[in-house]
Length: 158
Image (cartoon, rainbow, N blue to C red; front, side):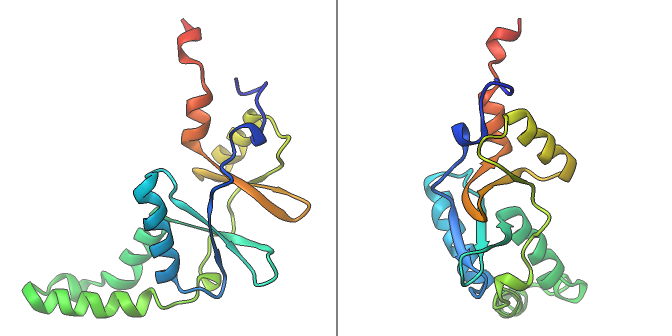
């Protein structure tokens, strides 16, 4: 289970990637498109222009950013079409920001040969649901907490 299997056994190589110069809107559109096919593909790896790892942006983080940037108290008090119009305008401004300026940088980074127990410990320590698998400065894939959960052989624990 978690000791025998390695990060490379479960990492997702079909991850969503974006450049740090892309807008948050572009990242959100790419994530949404990927999540329509697989709802658990909720993590985008953000790369610098030269391909270096900058961080991640998750669907959850985009929702938190929406709350911080667009849902100010004065906006929440508006009703009807005034709210819709103001909210749309505010969202456009918020999500025009460059992804590289607001990425999550404290995501756990693991090696492909790391046992899944090490991956789990890294996720729990950082309180993140995703880990990035890297080797030689290159991103190889990502692992979600759900991927680790699926590796558990619950039937054998009776």
